[in-house]
Image 1 (cartoon, rainbow, N blue to C red):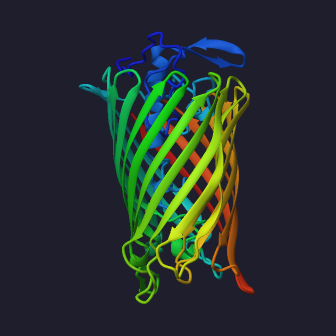
Image 2: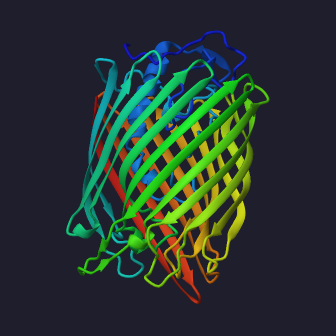
Image 3: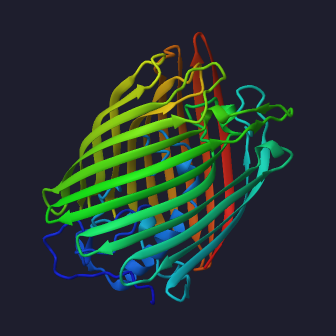
Length: 482
């Protein structure tokens, strides 16, 4: 293998933070862990392991970007990328979806000092509720194409990566529902000695609003498109058992006008906003497997214009503090659990301040070598378009199982539940749940098959009146990769 990820083992064993982050965060090439433990057995980690893990991570991460950046909210970690990586992966466990499969993983192409990985997914699918309507839902078939490409540097120091991906969906006889989503990203890392590194990322994307968004009704979210501009600079300093992380990031979201089936339009420019955040985190490692952390954040939420011509400004400042623990216990579990308090103060006296419990947790369990259970829990604040823009608490819980049925066949099943509580409109609220399953069949290095199906249900109450929206959706695709 030619992909050199600069896996240095220079004897700095007193620094236990030099471990790779999760695959969707910035890659951390320095590590003191030269082996992993699976089922009680210590397995040496070769240089090829890290090469293939990186190439696989880059390929998986790109298509996952567009649903994860749909809205920027103060304190929201489900919809915007965390300013600070979780840091719980110390290399002691390997999830089913991260496992190297040497006979099936794409190798990529080396172009000078970069490794390029590309893929194209072509598929078909169907839904029984194209526009997320409560009454008289319309079914439709659709086709889609999802290209992606990643180019990552192979330098012995520093790091640079470019990525691009898209998803283009065409609904038969239901063209207002068509989707053209994409993202372009540039990531970098500068190594300043063995203890300090500076990371940066720029992202430009277009995404679709989620079915469970608390900002708008489900039928509006189905047609809503968001243009996002995102940038972050983060510095990390590690010394012995202590790690300090400082970051500054900004997200700018622009909501496109909605064109309904009857030709009418809805302007969403009142939802356009910019969110700037400053975050500081201090980690202290009690053992090589467990560390404690404290995080503080201040965020500024600025709307471009009022929600309606006569409505007051909704600009606000948010504060959040978290304390917690992250861990990576060989052959058992890894994760991060944080809990604290979040406050939102509005500039206008018209709006009441919002404050309450904030939770951010992700736990992965490894009962055996073939299964990974994942638990995600969060509670955060968002801004809606109801009334004068009532803020809300969004609480979510997800349980997922990934199972390796055969070495080249991986299945998954998940269940999610969400509750939305509007602070200034107590008679208005929503809850939803989703059940999903999927499978991935690895045929060769260049071909794989993907299947996914889900049922989503959302109930909304408004005073004594409410409505319920349900959707059953499935898709099947073939992926050509290199």
